[in-house]
Image (tube, rainbow, N blue to C red; front, top):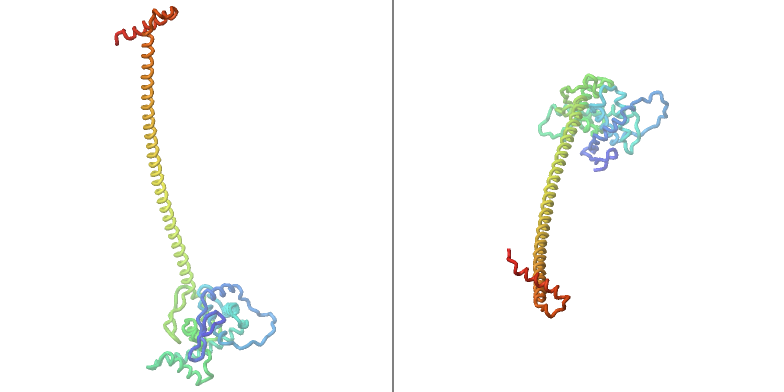
Length: 348
């Protein structure tokens, strides 16, 4: 297995020494076709120096054949074109992805593919004859070997097996083989593998079966566009549904968060209220204790004052008026009468 310089894909060799390749990605083909859509002008009238180019290698044949298949089966862009526009697209695509190989002209590529087409069509004829006979006990490899032997018995050995393997299952190629066998010229054959304006719709003809049979045609332009529009619509609908779902989840999460915040806030408020109540209860208890202490202090002071008053009254009553100075006798006499009057007065 060797690397393919055109597409960076592995290259294999079959039992006949012929190289066959994995096809390039559709993105590479489509990008090159669309990139050169408007650049399909002819070089007629320009004087160019003719340079002898090297013969086509097997890699170049494969590269050219793949681009012929890509352009001829594109349902959207390549509809209703004539030979010149068709081969301009193939030339642009071929040269834009040719890798290390030399640049080829439109005439060179179309002439080379005419040779490939002629040789592969002859080989397809031998192969189809063997398929129709369908000898018992022969495998596909045996049938291919028998077709190679019949081809070599009438002319040079068939050296384009790598191209035929790419073309043999393509409906456009099968139509082209039928046209070639019926004796059509190149212009008519090109009109066969380039979709005509009357066949641009979704209607698909029954496939012919020259080399492998039973292969479905590629979709038409309208069906391909409708498929792309449906895919875009489905993608937009899926994106819209996903957006609505995400917004719903976002609002649900936000509502849940707000509810949790409200519950947490209510819990905090309840805790603050309990703390405030405990604080007020503590303050009331302290105030009651303070008032009790104040009452006891006042009662004690009242008792002390009363004891002091009794002692003073007792002292005044014990004063002998006869022995005291005349100036004090009147005062103490009045005080003694006042004290006696307080105690002798009837209690109410």
